[in-house]
Length: 139
Image 1 (cartoon, one colour):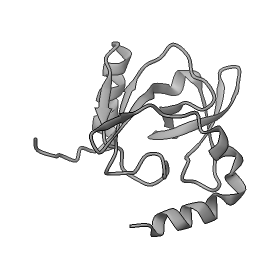
Image 2 (cartoon, one colour):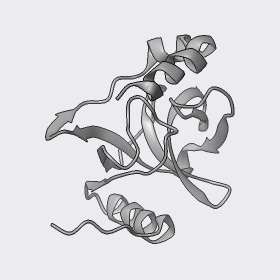
Image 3 (cartoon, helix red, strand yellow):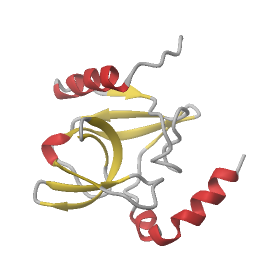
Image 4 (cartoon, helix red, strand yellow):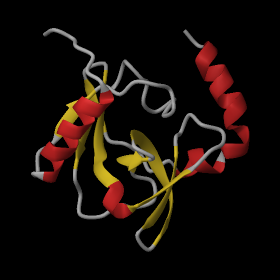
């Protein structure tokens, strides 16, 4: 199978349309904002549109004209607070209607992993800087 890199604007708009129609989509995200749970350029994610979004879900959403894959860390009504697992600061805010899909599986080394809710990882926020520094130095 050929590997092709498609601009996010094209790929994720199409993925959002397919999920809206009820299809499941799979793609390999780029970037390190979801380390150590999703390794950019290595792991693939399987996503679909679910009826609701809960704290701990990893979602694809629109934020300031961009598509971002981050974890929901707070919810108040239809307002969501999100942050990448690989980030040590900086949050995004959106409405539930801005969410295009939820990660239902992470594909790594031929295995399918169901994503955890990240509760312990969120509690470790003050220590993330050090944990991620060690993780990034591992082979």
